[in-house]
Length: 497
Image 1 (cartoon, rainbow, N blue to C red):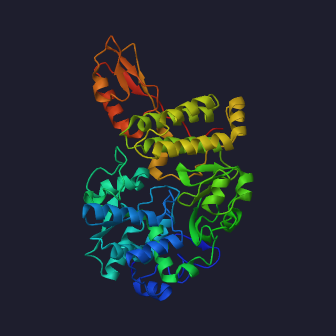
Image 2: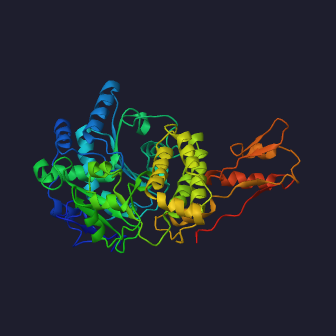
């Protein structure tokens, strides 16, 4: 018997996406059909009407209306007379996100139902599902495709398990056999996606929600949740939660109810929307309801449904600095505002956490990147970091006065194991020993992003932390220096006691 990694799943109210999971760790195709019923086939006009009536929006973070995506793909295909591909983004590169992994491992047929429904309505030539390489859901998905007899029409593409691999443009590039990073210019997948053809791309949960909507009908689907945002959402609750889980809840439920279900201590604040999201104060958490509008009204963001309560036992500034370093290392390295700006941002906020920085320096670093990245990574990371300045203002004053708040950095905010080590080490800087330097200039050729030459031909070394993607080149410059004049400084420790 095949076994799968199974995440804890809780629910408030009736199970929709999680229906049947109480009785089975994974719904095979026969069990799936018994639980959810028959999947109808809908012509494209009916499918668009269904998505509009149910106000279906993307569940990957941006919340873009699904019906508008469908129309954009149809218009593009009509203008060009080109075939259409349907793409499911199930990469889920956010370290704190688990909802799509739960669907892949435990309810994969809901995702495939939705993708197949769209593919048939659009007369698409292929369905492509992007997953994280070696992720827990890959085997379950492949078995589900075999159970349905769809091996000829569904292709699974494995992506590197990196934060930016989940960006839509990066996924399309990966499917096309290119380096899986966001494109250097804005390209809509509806115009030019897989193979340069019109592509309908959406998140795994979005397709699963569409399948439910088609099987239940709009009235039944909308019988739970808010009238303005009908249905349920999946939330990944981690952090200080003693019972971390993926929670299915109707919209409109109080966030505090979700946190109580997971035995989570709010403590100093809650991060909503992941590492491109925002911190929310304890006072705001008490008033928050689970919905896009509810979170936005209080300065938060639903995003991909990530909820990370901090609790009382870890330093909030140290936690934020740790993730900022990780996010700097996740840069694709293709545009200056990101691969140089994010290390500057991480360094500036790290200085705040160490008690010797300035808020103005953090704002300056964020402002230099604003709206200038090839994707949303620099702006999203800035949003996360700047929200910490607002929510943890008292902590900043305490650190400035005493150098610490007295709390260690426990790693409450989830990071991949290897990335957590890199996040501790990524504040390393290139140091030039002027007593040894002979002005050969070789270092500037090896790592020009960190070392330039002045008018006399001597190195000018960046004071920014070495980004993760440039660490190899930095070490090579050290090894190749004829005068042995370069070194990396020692990495800092995690504790801020």
